Length: 348
Image 1: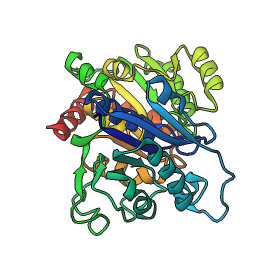
Image 2 (image 1 turned 45 degrees about the vertical axis):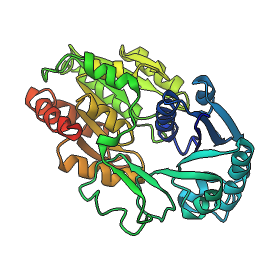
Image 3 (image 1 turned 120 degrees about the horizontal axis):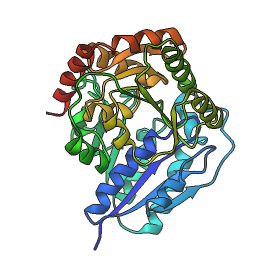
């Protein structure tokens, strides 16, 4: 009898695509081990749930609800209470029969939801990086780099919980392993710059990067450098960005399936501080990073301290001039080479 796995995760214009993408990676691994995987997602505005069907997994869409005005912070992501969401998810679990593992990846969910779902599964696997609430789980994965990673979940998980902490546990798609095996070593010279700030890029960092790169090319500082810009299908400004790229002579792609290939070909990336960080680091790709969400601040600061990213700061503080100055620093090969060495140590 095959193993049944249920994954509870959402994507939306507010949540972005990173949670869903890493859960799809986990689902692919589970399927390769013979598991039947079912996704439960709520039908939120700007969701990318069709990617679940495209990958051939079962999908149950919970109904869209009017956002409960009593909810605050990350709790608003569910658009309903944890109790209601757990009830709806438990209905799915009961219809599936015996479910061996429930995976939950949501900043809006904690032990309240998990205790209600607990009777319908053998194990609960939580993916988190906030370390700001209690969980009733058997496994917790936090793939991010923190200087104090070993203390962050003290008192927040049961004693029996298995903790998987740090980038060496990162959920990376198979294409990244293939790309790392096939890629040529980087010399530190700057020939190809990749721009990607996540699927939605709600703060429009992509436009800042395009303006910075275009100005550097126009004044001759990046005359021999190619630029590739990638956006997600949920980016509300994708048409305007495509037009700007055409005017600047930059390559433009929307919702790519070959991100590992693009990263392997790049010498420098401009991006956000989300889950793409570990894809970049795994491929040894130096990056100039802007934090585009509250949960990225500490990650970016700690990564900068460790020398594995060039951190510009929070989105509302970063200017086009800041990006220009940071790119100039990477025209010196030593900057890139030093960062590559430090990134490689994360996955030893």
